[in-house]
Amino acid sequence: MGISVNKEKCVGCGACYRSCPQGAITIDTVEGRKKASIDQSKCVYCGSCKSSCRFSAIDIDAQKKAFSNKEAYKGIWVYAEINNGKTDESAFELLTKARVLA
Image 1 (tube, rainbow, N blue to C red):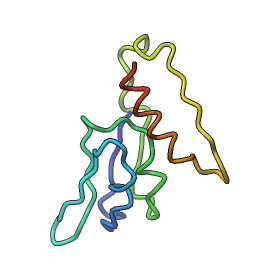
Image 2 (spheres, rainbow, N blue to C red):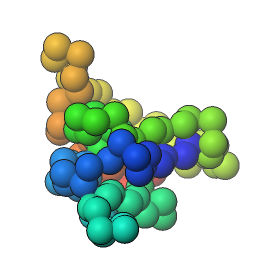
Image 3 (cartoon, one colour):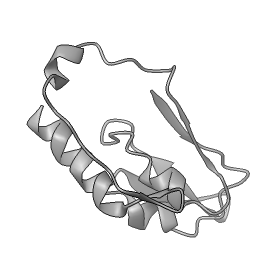
């Protein structure tokens, strides 16, 4: 997986920053404008930031980074409730905990 912020679309509103359960997002000033940045080492690719962005400025590409040890995640299940096409926020917290448990 890979995750990136489209700096042209990002307005630095902070919605993604507030939604990130890992604290992987910072809001930095770039050329006098606020923009989001994602720390790849902290990100667990839960998608919380992408779903919270009203400007479609965050892209997640599942093809960029594959898990090298899928056996480490064996036996970990996370169920998420979806209402009106949106994942319940608690699911992102559970995904984070599942990764720690694995």
